[in-house]
Amino acid sequence: MATLTFLGAAREVTGSCHLLESPALGQVILDCGMHQGGDATERIKQDNFQFDPAALNAVILSHAHLDHSGLLPKLVNRGFTGLIYCTTATRDLLRIMLYDALGLYEKDLERDNMKRKRRGEEPEQAEYTEQDVEQVFRQCLTQRYRKPVAISENTTLTFHDAGHILGSAIVELDLVEDSTTKKLVFSGDLGKRNSILMNDPEELSAADVVLMESTYGNREHRNEGDTLQELQQILSDTWQRHGNVFIPSFAVGRAQELIFYLGELHQQGLLDDWKIFLDSPMAIEVTKVYDNWLQILDHDDVKKLTQTHRSSLEGFLPSLNLCVTPEESMAINKIESGALVIAGSGMCTGGRIRHHFKHRIWHSNNTIIFVGFQANGTLGRILVNGVKKIRMFGEEFAVKADIQTLGGFSAHAGQKGLIDWISRFKSAQHRILVHGEEDAMQALAEKLAQEHDIHCRMPFQGERFKF
Image (cartoon, rainbow, N blue to C red; front, side, top):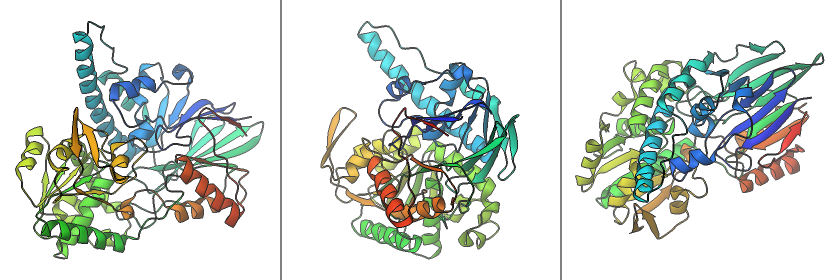
């Protein structure tokens, strides 16, 4: 008998972690993600493991986003010595993601410990160190898509392309227990079809148990053409107001798609004379990784690129400026109008975007464009919900900038894509929804039941399921 325990991303969209226990392979976890939002030191300290890391045989990692991978260094620090199975591109991105997260964590810890010192309190010790991050990479064992690999005497793992970000994988596990094979499929995060810089998510049909994400279970995305037209109109309106544009963006996937879309507008002569800034050292490094993989992408628009542009996203958008140093970032504040800034973090929980808000959010000429999911409790969600005042850096700021949301740039499948994907598992005995807020998950479950006679479980945090 195998058991799944849902330890993260259960009726929420961050902290993905599912403990799988079986006589066929012992204990493994699917993903090891951190929760996002709030102070990094508090967040990482509160994300405690509800299992013994030293007892784990392996981690199976769906992709590199921190809400799926961010606690790997802490896991190693707590005694995990097994293998971390992932794709090659995931490992390439993981090195960038984990080092960036470490830098932010160390800065927050240093600041918090200075406050403790002034209060006469003992300093907090780091939950993990650079040595732990390096150890993560030593424990990574990369696998290709569609190539089964034995991870124990009675278990086979196969990765399939999830189409979400580079290296993202659908996890397929075949477990042999008492001469009976049980197949578990975990979607990870599913991408939408026809995404500009991603291949389509692969379609599977055989499984006994299916775990599927449900981030956008209650809505659809606008199509690419309408979204690009809406972006062009927003930029044109802001240009006429002599304003600036700020786009909070995830460094992996979203920033690169934005560069491509802006490049398309530039090639069509529809971009005005915007000075475009990618103000994120991590996104700049990730873009270099994407450049290495452009040749294998199958989207028609990518295929039509010249050989020069297929080797560099930066070359496709000549007006792009890369801001690595803090001084380069701060210099943007001197530009009165005509600056378009892409900066992290994508949910405005930290990063350089908050510093740009400090200087610009109170001016009505400016526009803030949200192009990705904003989780409950994040500054991004608060702004999308229409708040008139926010607090940052110990100060209060009036929100007078125009707030816009473009849903068509999401890297997740919409409701129809999710339904189409899970509907193919005709013989699945159990279908389980994870990685979604409760209202989105409930809407998806109701639609699947009423229109497709597919009934799904929606586990709570800590719930155990036997199969």
